[in-house]
Image (cartoon, rainbow, N blue to C red):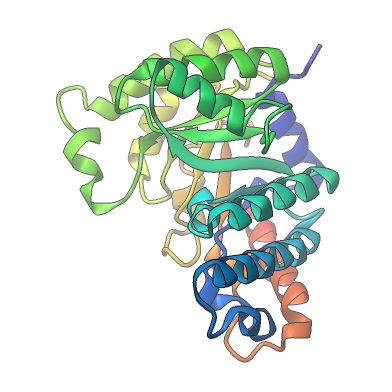
Length: 296
């Protein structure tokens, strides 16, 4: 029997001692100089091919640096998709290597569609026989909760997980998420709590999780009441300015339930860092954040 994703993530957090997820957001203009030089001055297909190869190599450095420190990594698909088929090949390589190193992979795709289209997304992103075979995926529910249905089958059968966008912290999020009374985000949390109850692991943690931004604070605690078994995926720490108390506001009394994401704050050391030292700098920044999470 395949273990529930909620348990798999809890075990991964226990193994490294901190609820840290490193976001893989490979901004081309912030890669080490030696990697940027590979695609400088190129255009079209040549640019995409060389840039994708540079991204793949940078990811290998980052993955190796955070092994034993982070429980998971979260590649943001848009950066790879922007490089066309070479970018997607780089993403497949990154996901495969992460699994080899024992890191859980959360595909940050924010997909949200229905019926056969949603099923195709589920196959592409989560199915073990698909191109990525990610452990979990981010989904947008604002078309309706039927967008999650095909993904739930993979959660049940293959120990996969989903993180549904519930409370994000972008300026325009209030238009939908805070609409109505009770607010739409609260109603969504209630529905996800019921849905997740059927996909619960032995540790009381579900395969159905939620994206709850680090700036949510008090609302994260209210959402926790609606989703007692959910993992919260918490972006916004580091470069975006969120602090650890905000990021962990929605965690459970047992200390579980909040997986904190940092991308730019870990991936890109200060200007002037020698290329040969980038891996060590990534590891040190990840280790510093992990220590803070463990102590909070």
